[in-house]
Length: 110
Image 1 (cartoon, rainbow, N blue to C red):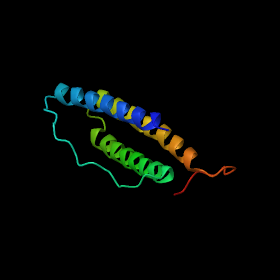
Image 2: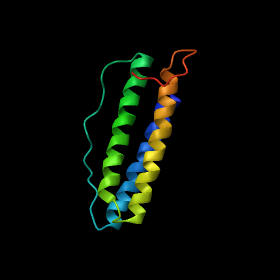
Image 3: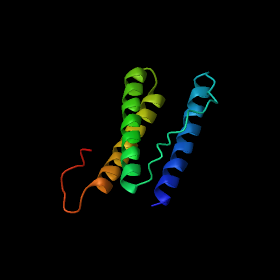
Image 4: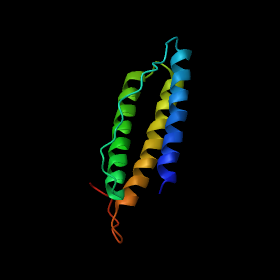
């Protein structure tokens, strides 16, 4: 189970690097600020999975907003955002499968 959070963290670092490159490509300067930690002090595996699911839902929502903003302005950005949305959908599917009870076929509704 430890490998999953490490995999997510590694993927997040890759995304941060890519976004930084896109920001500079467009003439901007990426922020070096770090957000506050999301620690909830809950360590039960189901709680951790729910937190991860909520994080993925938030990321997916943010990517959809970004897709609306990018629109037809940049093919490069539009394709990057579409790829991120696709990745989020796959991660959401993995998270919901892990939260299903044995024998449940319906998606987890939290």
